[in-house]
Length: 175
Image (cartoon, rainbow, N blue to C red):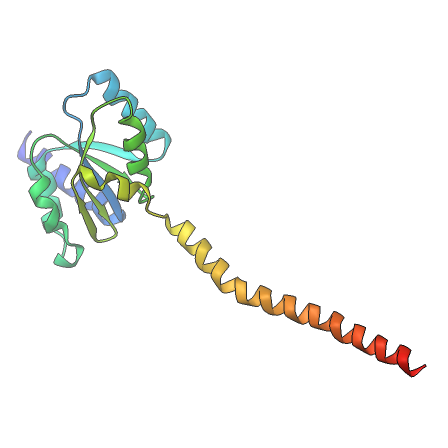
């Protein structure tokens, strides 16, 4: 790879990293070409971009970001073959990895970057797969906010029936 190509790759990675909040680093080095293509196809169908990168180029791209991003926690896993899974859904790659690994021993999760949190190691796969998506969390918050209003409306409606029933009973007694 020429210096120009390396610089272009670093710039592409920097642009991609600035656009995503979630990405996974994996090792799929011992998989056959057929299995790697099958894994890539599954990822593509789910909207996940898979890129095999050189660790030194990825590290240079990561180093260009401010410390608040906490990318420095990922440097220790940048050894050996590395594939980056770029996603807009925090838990989807973990679910795909778990499903794919039912029949294969790889890809192995090296690390995951989830909205400034870093998950290191393959043992984090179960925790990542159970993360709730942003849409799920927003739905839960809306449900929690609506619950008291629904109870209030229900109480007011039942109260109206109670009052009208009481007035009707008093009216009947008065006759």
